[in-house]
Image 1 (cartoon, one colour):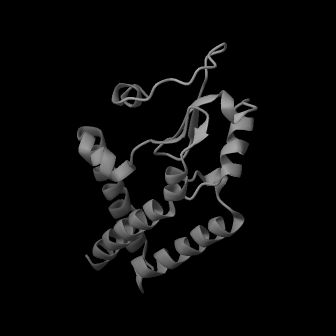
Image 2 (image 1 turned 90 degrees about the vertical axis):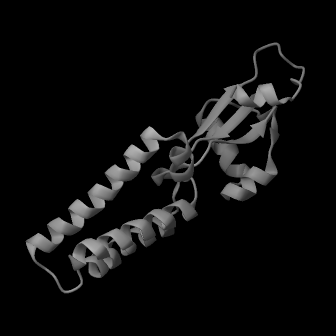
Length: 163
């Protein structure tokens, strides 16, 4: 039973840690961040199983972590409020060709990272982006300005909800 309790505590600690790290995808991590995650894996194993090196102890730890992952997944699926709490909300990082600096600071993104993602999406100029949204899973979605539309759109509450 000790392994189940330890695995539960470590699961929620890891969940909080990953949320605090921000909305980066694995491919966007620096080499140092990846090394830290690998080292954490070894430390977690030692903390969860303690001196229990048995097959049953390892199975209990894996099943416990899988159980909590499934519980959180179902909670997100069944409740919009839990989904928002557990997964986060999409955040607008470019609005009508202008970078929303407060949101970049909140998610620790740089202008260079946005421009890099734009180039990967085949967009050459920031002015061509009507919206860029940082999705809860770490991807950036770009909505290009309609061709021939050079006038900025008025901003109101209805426009923000349509995204």
